[in-house]
Length: 68
Image 1: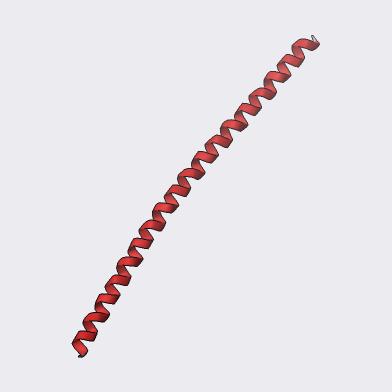
Image 2: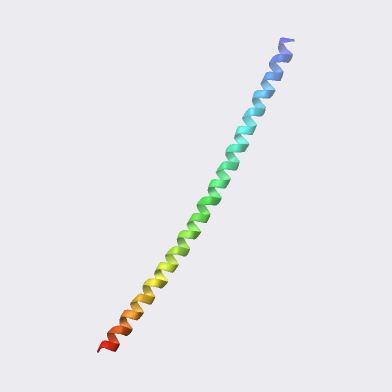
């Protein structure tokens, strides 16, 4: 009887460990996706900032030419 009880407890504990491992893996996958999405957003923001900077420089050059 003790052997059966020990076996049942071992199975229960092993099942909990597998669930924790699965949950951790899922959490890590979600974090990876969030990180990649964040990188994409940063790249898009950098491109928009660069475009705005270039537009400002062009307007400043045009204004300098008009002032001369």
